[in-house]
Image (cartoon, rainbow, N blue to C red; front, side, top):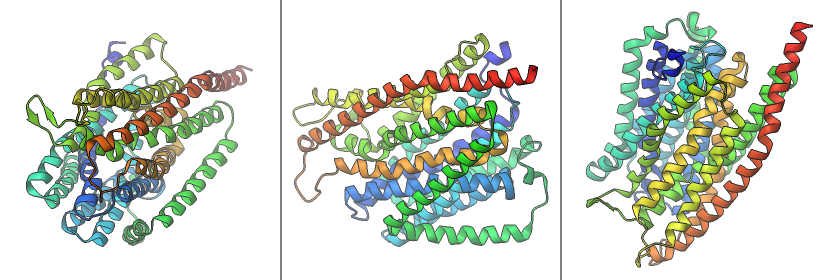
Length: 494
């Protein structure tokens, strides 16, 4: 019992995967910290268009994860796909560092990063799930701590990369992301023997050089195709719709082919993934509309120090680092005592906290200064509520897949989980555009404050309504899961 209560006592492979994910996310969030502002300030892209480009890029980033999951499960192997994806990501960041004012090179860099992330993203979490036996009470805690790795990496980069870009230029800021991937690969190769006994079936077979060559050519083609798609956003939206429809159809086919407890759990997984799309639309406001709100309408002086407003984004991973061990302990404790909240209830609480995070902003606007600026403490509270909501939905999404979906589909369905982010990113980009202001006019903080206040109030009320629906349906989802398990138990004893 004492072992299960100790959230830090995880299998040794956990720590390899933890640091691998940390440094990969360091690279990605370094790019995220700068991208929208870089498009506006360096490339003279309109603010509303920068949000749409950011949304399309994010959609590609997460929309390709299912492909990487499939390659990891069926063709290359989980561990080989991780390494391949990291190399492609590093190449994308290097192109970004060299792009300067050439927007076509920027599109190629973003396309390469999207493909690299698609190869990489699903596989560390899939590998982690394979390190635990079914029913291990440490699993929720392990995935919560794993999610903490994401946020340690993002905290360091969101705090430091804007400072580096300010003082040394955009190129150096993007170069730091490439360095993050180099550290991730070095970490993996030094201690990869820790995961020698874990992986998907292809990991334990010799590399098929012909298949590897074909995949390499396909990946290079995908990078250029992704760049083309980002330059023609309507194609990006159509492509996402096609990919999403195919993934949903495959998922539904698997549900129909299953039975008993397996079918019930997969239905619940599908419902939770659909609910998560709404959450991700809210979440993706952080690097877009919420980021520009802090630039335009939040005091930048904290305790006498002038803070780069872009670095306020680091509050999200900061709070997650604080809360992750506490929630991991609570999950493990409740697993031992048998009083754990169900996954649907956790998701509902997460959405409720997301509503609170947005509703704080119109309240803050009522206490703004005569110049239209809000005290930074309000944005600290907003990011706190957002972080707690994120932990309950995004942080447990991977654990949800591991628990509710059969192991043979882990890689593919984890990719489908990230596809919810992809679908939401496109919507979020257009939604964030409602806060954009005409850059050609003399816009002041007093002009933008009511725009942001109305926008975030609307978003908060929508999130609150969705949370009420989720609380109302949670008992039905719980009964579906439990009833199917009871049927299986009765058949087993008959």
